Length: 52
Image 1: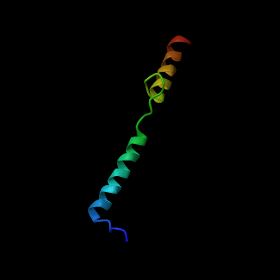
Image 2 (image 1 turned 90 degrees about the horizontal axis):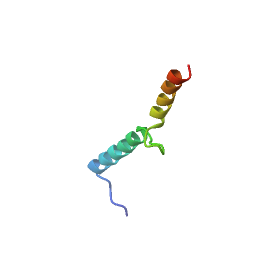
Image 3 (image 1 turned 90 degrees about the vertical axis):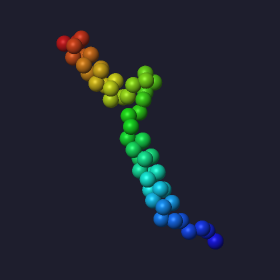
Image 4 (image 1 turned 120 degrees about the vertical axis):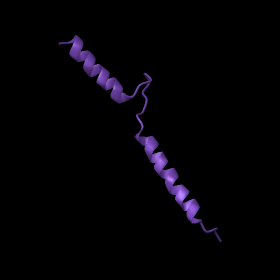
């Protein structure tokens, strides 16, 4: 027979899931060591200043 999960343990398991969801939302770092958004923003600004 399995042990009943206490309310406290149940609540902690919910918090752990929400923290892992938050970590998924963090910017992912590419091989250059910066986020993809930062790289795209840099390239857009570079193109505007150097190619026009």
